[in-house]
Length: 168
Image (cartoon, rainbow, N blue to C red):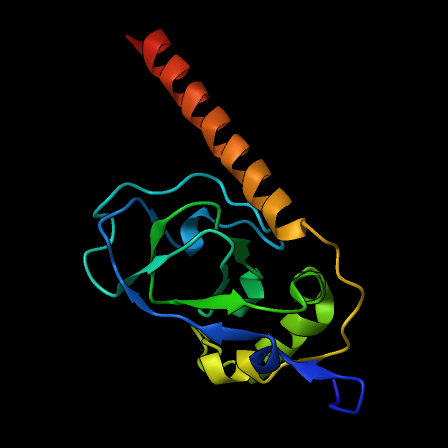
């Protein structure tokens, strides 16, 4: 998108965070789904030994490697996340940014600016400089996504426990 008076950049709405890993379950692009703010299931503690950082509920993670996979998520709990994800603490226009991540324009932009052939990467600065037209905010959307994602994670835990009982 072309920057004009009615467009803003992600950098005006969010900041990148990088906090020391705290030894929690981990998330990476592997557990993310295409254009879906909820993820599958966290990975075990220690899955990734280096380049991990702590993330908090409500933060937005965007995968920087292979942007054609179009992966992002809203964090529902404290985790350690891989350094290949941009960790954004969104302080305004959350609904608008989420809308952009669910549509083609952002991913076309990301793929156009990515570098590399086998494993293309988009830079954090390019993500922050993405320009979009803000829309109306949906009050409570972030909290709703966190609650639904926690419920989904709990249901997956119950399902896995039942499967383990059946296997025994």
